[in-house]
Image (cartoon, rainbow, N blue to C red; front, side):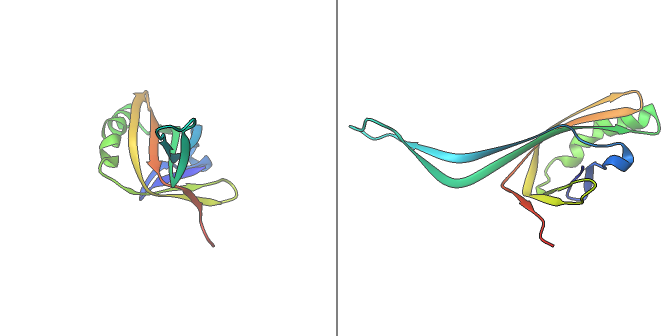
Length: 132
């Protein structure tokens, strides 16, 4: 699986040994609970909004220990203030999905030798399948 956020590649896929680990996707609908006086039951109303949260971890191999450390240090800053599409491409099928107008709510980066590891939490609306 390849994952990119705008023009930033978060996971370059099988060819680069960068497949997502612990990939999870959560969908949450906006539900309003209505409670009225003299009613025995509350009523749930679906407001029609869907929030999708995607979480995954990626390990990236770098040429040097210093390159891994530098990438880990600056990577979160690259993602700050971006609101763009998250693109997910399945491998080997190349089935493409989009999470439109997504934001990275958090990223945790670590460096261990010449490997950097990143844990992403990304939030957006509904996931859509790319049209041919």
